[in-house]
Image 1 (spheres, rainbow, N blue to C red):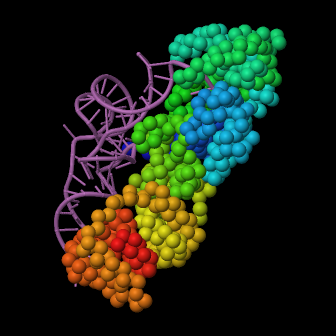
Image 2 (cartoon, rainbow, N blue to C red):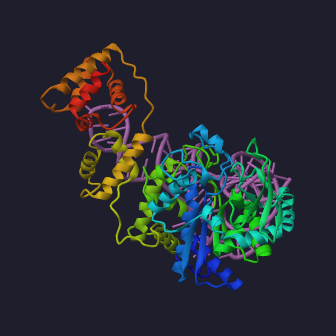
Length: 528
RNA sequence: GGGUUCGUAGCUCAGCCAGGUAGAGUACCGGACUUUUAAUCCGGCUGUCCGGGGUCCGAAUCCCCGCGAACCCGCCA
């Protein structure tokens, strides 16, 4: 076989960065600063997939820097977008604010200046916890400060050409009539209902009428206001079909990833950038949407989604980075039950990185090491962290609920799994414990107890309550069952149901001592 | 109507995006340990890699044509 040349650290991220640079060289643009962009939705609770866009863009930034270029991630918040749908679980009064820019809607959680700022803060918080550096750019400021005014002007002057091209490319015909610019109606404060129908290029103003608009399945009546908006000053924004292009040029963006749901918009924007604005469009990479386990798209507008905040209750930031960096193609169903395997997988690639595990394929070793480096944001630790298999920890945490950290740690020392306690292990126990508490708790089973069993349980409770430590509890339990006329097999099953809400469990004698004799006795007494 | 992804062990899936011995968990079978259940440990079994064609010394992996499933777009942002 011909020797493969390894690019960068051998991952898809390096390959992408390499292609990006090749493309930039062919356009002849400067490479003093190669900026990458990620758009952040601000209309709903940000799920882990929204984080993916920014995290992957950051990966490309790292790869570019690794190749010797300066780079920066712009995190652009779409917080001038109008609210279209109220996410599940949020109050009904938001209905009064439908179609208003999310930055001009009060924060239903009461902790931020506005709805939009609350949502983008959640995402930025996720990025911060991941260790990702970015420059935050708000849509509101972008328009208020007129950063896109030249682009808006050019786009509006060419609106007829653009409208026809959109119809041709994606079959959407509305922009053959309407201008691709939505003023915020000065009468009612809404976007979308105000339709811009004429551009006055000398004054840089659009004329609009606030009519009715269809948003989702509902029809929203405008206030009928007839207005004029100054594109350099007044509130308003470009339609998505052209806005990206304007941003790319204004901010000199060379890379942006996108989800397949906005594929058409990106296609149009690429054309707009190239042909109308004269700015060669950035390099892209398309990713699949994250689906929840049922196969439904995780909507940013639905409550109860997998967010970075909720993920971090069970998994480390590195487990999220691994999820997002290991690959980009393919439909991904994602849920909290992926956390245990990702936690363990991180440990596996850590072992490969530090040479504790050998792979037979050299190219794969390089790629895996590269992946490990990206998951550590190209700043890998000096040596491996102490680690315990996540599933084992979940099992132990199910057994120990009180004094969890110290008791689980003691078990791990007994097993010889760890040599000494450490803050990392404490952290892992906390995470696995949350997981055990929230997900791995078996459904409450209805416990059927007959008279003979009741008697046996009562005898057992007596023994356990005694001051004296039983010498051979395992055997005692066996004998109690036999002398009470209960099948030992059934008796054990009942005990597991009482203690663990499960049909089976660890060896019962030592297990009861782990839980505590008195505690067990009282648990059993509840069922007698 | 347009587009994307997926199809691998009985089950859930990894491996594919940079081609090089077909993998894991689970289930199943056997053994060790246990005065019982379970756990644990050791060993074993499991394949039309959806079908067909192509490229290649070599294809689960790349390309083309089918079949099946899911999702996105065709409101809006």
